[in-house]
Amino acid sequence: MANKVDIFAKNLKVTDRLDEYTNKKIEKLYRYLNDIDETRIDLSYVKSARNASDRQVAQITIRGRGYILRTEERSDDIFSAIDAAVDKMQRQIARLKGKRQKGRGDGSSVSDMAMEIPEMEETEEEEVIIERRKSFTLIPMDELEAIEQMKLLGHENFFVFYNMNTEAVNVLYRRRNGGYGIIEPKLG
Image (cartoon, rainbow, N blue to C red; front, side, top):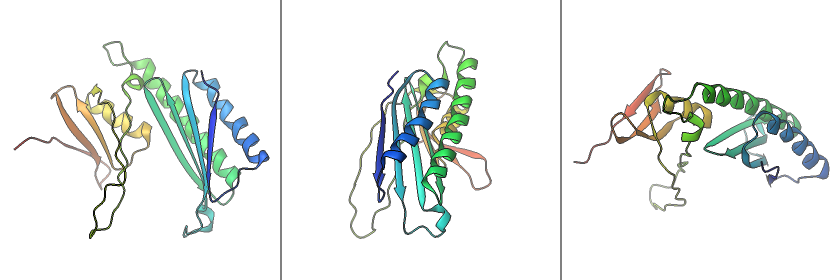
């Protein structure tokens, strides 16, 4: 277990008090999950946020053996944003551990099948420049496991996965009515 916590700040100074507070809160997470490899905390102040109560942002990303968990919370105080993000992360860990106990039937858990989804960034229409590329390993899973992974990662819009039933890459997406849809691409 790596107890190293990386704290990154944007438009915000990480004081000793803030660093100590953040590390103290994150240590709680290690009690619930003992195979955490990397913990990243992104703290930022967003001056352009519409609502003043959404200006302080705390994002926690935990990477472990076969899983990635991410939470983000906003508040008018950075300490309360950290508290809310840690609480949300504890709920995600509990959900992950519950899913681990059920397993997949083939001996491996959903957390062992976790993957990271690339984040799409908007670009100007006139000048198309790919600003970021991301690669990830596709791990076979069924549609229900893909929905669970999508929820665990906190991805709201879509999730790319290798469907073990159809043996093809699929895109799972959230529909406006709250349901899910699947895109099954075919070469033409």
